[in-house]
Image (cartoon, rainbow, N blue to C red; front, side, top):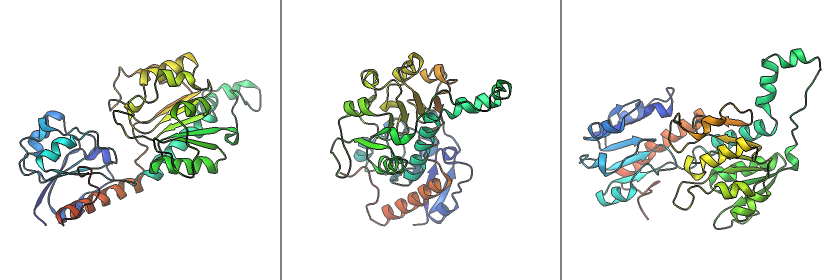
Length: 320
């Protein structure tokens, strides 16, 4: 197995510090920083294996890839791949699981701590000269509270949700969680109860027909006016317009977002209306990407390819 034609379609999403020389042990490797949708067909025409992060792959751009046997997604979520089409074609699809749990949980908690403590406001207060000109040695408004007084609602108890819950509990928060099948050891509640009781709500769900817009206008209305919402899952698991409206109206105490319905975030995104707010943190889908997580991810991709061509089932999402 050293004659494969491996095509990496969007290496820029993995960072410039990640190298792919190990894949040359398996065959010829073509690396593209970015690939426009209209160029996918040409670039994968002779591929045996495609390595991809965000680009959509379906019948429209795979139908002429006659040698294609395997698609490796450098992520846990794989909603950009038409898995049903791949099944019909006999194309294997692998994802990577668990590689970014620490990275995403770390970013989630960093957002929560910043929003709870009004860090953006206080940072700007000093940097714009207001503190220097105030004549007062300190400022403690806007008011912030200790997290030991707070309830943190975890929406989704996969690896990332559980890791976030562990850290939040260590910070002294009461933890409640939403999971369709309640999990032993957690105080599991329905999604509406979670929205009503939580001071912090972080979302860690895959995007499916059932989870799309699970945080919507009606559920935001149930939340405390001081509630903080953090989405590090998929953009479309929340109603982006409803969240932006809630920030503007004062219905939410804070918002942290790392994922968007369309990426990169378009100029017409509702989040652009609140981008300058001190109680809003917007990051460019980076939560998963600590260096260690990205290295781990590519190591897993390498093992997925080896397993596939060795006749073993590993991280396959097209089976079952």
